[in-house]
Length: 86
Image (cartoon, rainbow, N blue to C red; front, side, top):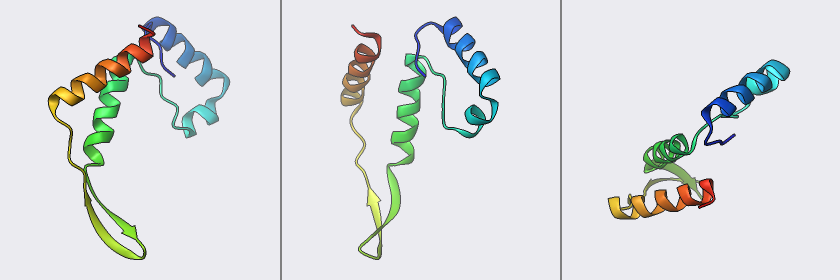
C-alpha cells in the first residue's frame, strides 16, 4: 500500500491488520510512503546486482551493471512523479 499521508497509512495498516490478521501477517503486503518505495527499489536493485542463475541446466554467474547516479536520480524522480501524480 502506498500513501503520501503517513497518518492515513498507519490507520489503514492498523485496520487491515486487525481485520485480516493472518492474511496480512503471512503476505508480502507493505505500507510505504513514496520515499520508502524508492529505498525499497534501491535495496532490490542492490541485492540483484550479482547472483547465480540456472540457464539451460547450467549455473551461470550474472552480473548486472548498476546505473550511474544521474540515471538513478532521473529514474527516482520519474517514479516520484508517477506516485505523487505530478
